[in-house]
Structure formats: C-alpha cells, structure tokens
Length: 497
Image (cartoon, rainbow, N blue to C red; front, side, top):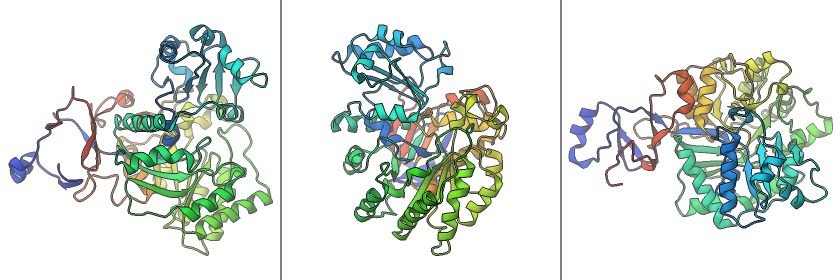
C-alpha cells in the first residue's frame, strides 16, 4: 500500500509499488503483519470518559483485587489527603481472581485518608468510610450504592477536573483507543455530560489540530430540559457534512427521557402512555423538521415497536432514508421490528453489553444465547454497526467485541452466545458498518485508492490466530488521515519518527 498525503494512493504488489515510487517513498517494513481498515466504534461514551480519564483509577485490565488495591494506593500517594479517588467502571468482578467486589472495610484499609469510589458497571458503587463521611447523612449507610439513579445522583456531586485536566484526559483516552486500532468514533453523549459545557475539551483538541481520532457526536439533552436544550442546539449548531474530523450528527442517545427503558431483559418491557408517545412524536417532529438526525437508546424490542410508529408516520412527510435514524442496543429485537426499520432506512448499533450482564438480567439463560440476535441481524442486511458502549458499561477494547461476536463467550455469565459471526463479518461491522452511522461509509471503513489512509497494523493476524486469543490483539501502529497517531517502536520502525 502506498500513502500520499492523507489518502491511499495505490494498492498492490509490494515490489511493483517499490518500482513505481522508488526513492520518493519512505518504506515502512511491517514484517508481514496484517493491516486492517481503521476500527470505528459506532456507540461509545468517549467524551465523558475523557473528562476524568487521567484522574480516574483504571481497573479494566486488573486480574485481582490486590492489583486493584495497589493502583488505589498509588493514586493516594500522588494526591493530597481528602482528594477523591475513583474507579469508574469498564471492568467486571468475574475477571478478578477473587470473583467478587471489594468491601467497605478493604477500601478503608487501603485508603484511610482519601474518599474512594469503586464503581462496577452501572450495578453498584462500593465506598470506603472516608467517602461515606464525605457524602454525609443522606448517603448510603452501608457504603454501597445500587442502581442507575443513586449512582448518577451521587456521582454528579463529585468534583470535576479543571478544563486543562479534561483536555489532557480526553487526549489520553483517544490515544488509548488508538492503541487498539481505533481511528474514528461516534460519541453517544450520556448522563453527566452536558452540552456545550462538557465539549470544551474536545473542541480545544479539534481546533488546535490535536485529535488523534475522528469524532462524530450526538447531543444528549439533560433530563427534563429536552425541548429547551434541543431548541438551543438547533439554533446554534450548523450541520457540517463534509467535516471528517469533528462533526455533530444530531440528537441522541436519549432525545426524550420519558421513553428511556433502562438495561436488562428480565423485567416486563415498558408500556408508554398516550401522553408520553405524543411528547415523543412532537420532539421527533421538531428534530426532523430542522433537518437533523436522531438516535435512540432502546434495550427492549417492545420499546422500539412503540417508538417506531412516530417515525413511520413522519416518513410520510419527509423521506427518512437520508436521515439514517437508528436504535442503539435492542438486545431482544425481532424480525418484525427489523423489517419496519428497513422500510424507513433505519439501522441498529449493537454492542457486547449483554456479555457483561449477570444472568439475572435475562428472563432465562436461553435468552442470553441470542442477545442480540447477531446472525439474524446480519442476514437481514439491515444497516449494522459495532461498538462497545464503553467506558462504564463495558471495556473500551474493540477486540473484546470482535472476540464476543466470533466466539460467543461472555464476561458476566457462563452462557455462550449462539449466533456467531465470521471474523470477516464481525470486522465489517466494526469498519464500513459503523461508518454508515456517521454517513461516511463512502470514505471511511475500507482501504481503497483515493480514500483517507486510516488503518491499523496488528501484532498478530486477526484472521488466523486462535479464536480464544482475538481479545488479546492490539495495534502496533495506527494511522489516521495518512499520519501515524500511535506506534510501538519495539514492533515497528517508522523512518523519520
């Protein structure tokens, strides 16, 4: 492959390219390693994660509680007493040798003079006694927070890093994603991430040309202020369809919080009132009339069926194929809903979230074998993108998702997913499939002459390594727009760098 400037200039036999370019080219010897198109995460909470990335403690890759405690001790030594120390998700207790959460007493022993917050996905937060005292008499008396409302309610009160630290954290997290071959992402917004306040760090990196990955983003309106914040967005933000570095896509992933259906499949699916659906319809109409797009969190098929009626009605007023409306997650989607989505040109962004759930999140173990129904979705030919939903609900490593799609092996339970994809199919979803959701599949997601040179060089061959080791793959170098944004000098030499 030959790269000139930001684009792929030629593909073909190495010797023929050497003769064509001669001494004009810098030669990078890959030593037989596989090159893949840059990976694109179609649903990740990267901007929120970046705000605290350099101040958080990371348990994503720890193998035992003792390893995790050592990281907390290190953080305490580097910070004044009384400073919060936070572990904010992305790990599962089953990855630990002890296969359990830490206790209040353990965290107190590890960090007697620092308030400590250890979050396990969106399930629970374990505090030490210093944190319990800091949260006051209205905090959890036993030192454990459980469930989405309490976790976000108390978490929103914790101190926020200054803007300079948010910039460092966002840049560091993007570089961490580059380590795994990621070249572009679609940011889903999320609880605790306010527009425009929490976009200052990523805006700075974009305007100072320091982005190491392409960022497409959805604006997430605050709960209870949806209409006002959406009106402000529609009035202030301009569509920028040709911007491949930093582009707003529209409103999501919760345009209208009354139709939020949570996570998990065990409880009965929600049935929305006529008033709720009328409010939903009015908001969707407002967004579409302004020429924007939207994406929606929907864990349950029943949720999608109710919300789709509005899209179908509005499709009679506007052709929606070019809007590329989408649902995220849909772990129990069925063929009828897929057919309805296809009729209006909509898609589904899927993740390996269900692989992190405990079995009590499903109605029965058999449901875990098809959550979501990957094979049915692939064969339906509906637009599909792959992603992580990181960095709290899951690990941010894209090879964990690829491994799950190919092997079916879960993290949070022993049931194996049965609707596997081939390696090629899975990689397609993480490249050109995900590019569809940013309306950039004509430029991103494939290596072809004239397209941007976004690619990753892997440590081993994704197509030939044993299935059980796909999750252990990583990039030895990652290029975005024709320039290396990450490389490991112990594996690869880039002339002039």
